[in-house]
Amino acid sequence: MSDFQVLAAVRRRLLQEEAAPRVHLALPPKAIYPFILVELEEIWSSYPFKGNDKRNDIQARVKFKVSACSRSPGMEEAAYLSDKMRKVLEGATLWLPDTTVTIRFLACVAETSGRATVSQQLRMIHHFYDCIVRR
Image 1 (cartoon, helix red, strand yellow):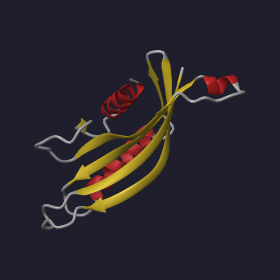
Image 2 (cartoon, one colour):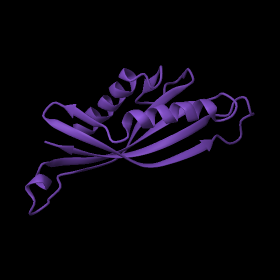
Image 3 (cartoon, one colour):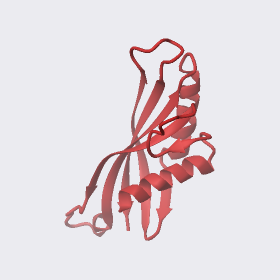
């Protein structure tokens, strides 16, 4: 499936570019902070485009979320990770077997978890990306 290949390629790219020491595809049971979490949001496949030959090369469209997670006071650590991961991913082209993936930045949202004490609060900055998988 191209969606998991895309997520694995994004994870590999973040690790290669040293955006964070830990990059996960699922939330680990005992997380060591800070870390980056890559999650699938949506996938659309089998585009029935007519006309332009380049449109026929599109295999899928994948939307995913990349979150910088931190427990340090303030948002500085999460903001630093967020800046590094945006520089690595925005406008990037990834080459997979038989396909090319072009990544586009969509939006960014910052949040702090609710009812925990200040020292236990989880601070997260979410980046939403859209990518086109082509042959």
